[in-house]
Length: 290
Image 1 (cartoon, rainbow, N blue to C red):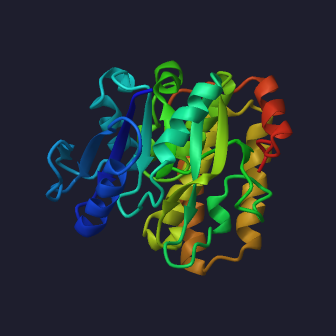
Image 2 (image 1 turned 90 degrees about the vertical axis):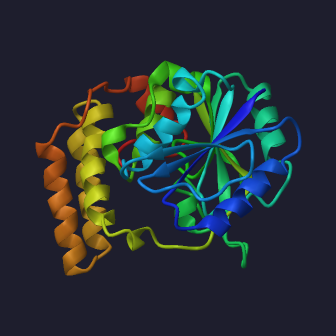
């Protein structure tokens, strides 16, 4: 199985990027082809053999990753699977790529593998980085219904079948949009605790656009993918959860602005999932109402 890797960068973490590239090169097995996409910034110096693409402006995370996919041919067809890695992450174990190959080879319906993210100093995994509701034990691998954007491997046949990441999302929930489309097409997603990406512990709200994008894209996600009766239920649950979490007044104002924007702006093509997919998500422990 031939693997590629897509890394997007803003050019502001050159040392971390080089360390990540070294950890990809150190993986056991066949060489992994790597493409680094400069998302509105020049790509720092990288080792020979690493391909680069520089975009004139920041096009957002999903569009930047889609550019990286196309660098491997239409839909990434030049490789069998693509690793998507954050530029400040690191693969601490040398067998991660081989574990990916083995997982995909053993299960023809496995479409996406999501890695465990661990702090490099403490080894701790944040609860939000375990993509299931029962997240208390990050060391337990399981089937899941979504994946982590900067620490995963995707079979390129999935992209060819269901399409790439939703580019207009810019940031937030683009992984769940792809995950739901993949599940609706019959693919499965695994969370693997033994496949690790080291990444410093951070809060998603460090991004200035976080609250608006999270709310807007949540509405878009529902409008694009859910059967009509579930759209208000899903969004109503998330509205209540947001209020229960008691964000600051500026954060709540940004959230409601994004929520309104999600209803009044185009969300892209609507392809509601089958009801049997709703049941599959429910059996996997995450019904699409939360």
